[in-house]
Image (tube, rainbow, N blue to C red; front, side):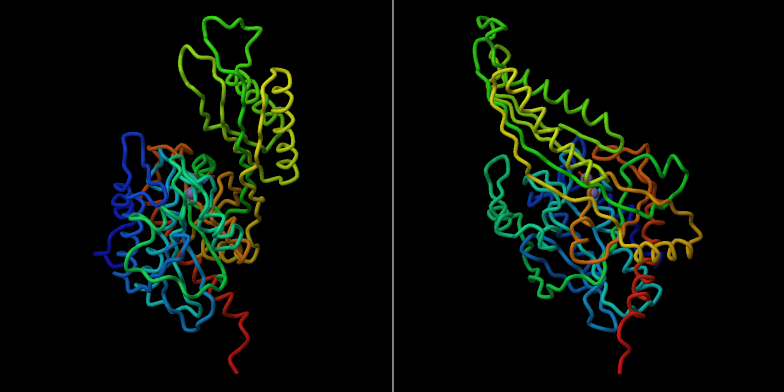
Amino acid sequence: MSEAAESITSGLRTLAQFGATPAGIDRRLFSPADYAARELYVAWARADGRTVTQDRAGNVFARRTGRSDQAPIVTGSHLDTVPTGGPYDGAYGAAAGLWALRELDSADVETEFPLEAVAWAGEEGSRFPLGCLGSSAFAGLNDLASIEALRDDDGVSFAEARDGASGLLRGVPLRDDTRAPSAYVELHIEQGPVLEHRGIRLGNVTAIAGQRRYDVEITGESGHAGTVPMALRRDALAAAAEIVLALETEASAHEGVVLTVGRLVVEPNQTNVIPGRVTFRIDARSIDETLLTRVGERVVDHARHVAAKRGVAARIEQIERRAAVAMDPHMREALSEAFAGLGERALDIPSGAGHDAMCVAAVAPVAMIFVPSAAGRSHVGDEYTSPAELDLGVEALARALVAIDRRLAKALPSRS
Ligand code: HGY
Ligand code: MN
Ligand code: MN
């Protein structure tokens, strides 16, 4: 990349301003901050001469031409964040897609396949109750009509937000090439402590953990905190608490399962009123699909058992199911080839975090590259990866794109 070119560290610093709060970055889908981030992404891409398009799910694409008009090799990640996000989760892989294409421009590399950088919409599910929203629409895993009907906590639908002031980008045409990618590779921070602990700077992801998300509603009986004897209560929060602790014990009993209740709403949420209704969301994950399905069944059992014992009503709805996804072995070999060219050791590592790659895997061979997260921290404002590691990841991604292109080109029927 030419010296004058902006470093990815500097680019991410600019992106991080959009949605910055004292608690971290809050850049939810189709918020003004998210719109500004997508606008900057488009400005970067157009400054590099890329053809920019978007789709009706809000995904943004930046294409670099290849010798042929095969379906593109795609790379990218998401620009949205959790409400207390860091500057690298998603944004790094999205920006790195553009920075890797710049590396190829600087090295005068021509590829057989078009290369396309993508900024996926709404991966976190932090505004609408569905993760990997844009990539799942792109892969046809969730139909757009059902996504358009999703509503945020204020009752605003996806369609209203998308068609609103911070929705689809003005001046960016809709994507016309709806073919599945020839391949997809995603660069992402590890969001865990393993690479740093092992002193290895690159990860060649083996698989992405499966996810299940459940909405649970507990309905008890509200009442005066001072007058209702304990034995006569149907306290929705006490019931929810017992269920959450039972789920923690259940998950802890299974190696390789994690389960989190990170969101819980108490009604009427008043000091001197017995909680009559509690809603909470369960996030369960494992690389082992069979085990994850079994834990999901135990989630329902525990909720039903506690509800019956306490005389409250429990409604459990599975709102998201993403199967564990193995990375494509040939793509992983291409990554190893790219890393070897860099003289960098790489670690085969599973991903406990979910990524857009798990959806794109439904329509294309996928692979993922990790770089370290300082102290394994992520989904927090002080998430950190060093400039040297960020640059290394971009270099590895650029080389991986070339290695994938060469392998796929070899498999093309020779021109007659
Ligand atoms: O939750 C996840 O694993 C991802 O950060 N959306
Ligand atoms: Mn995330
Ligand atoms: Mn992410």
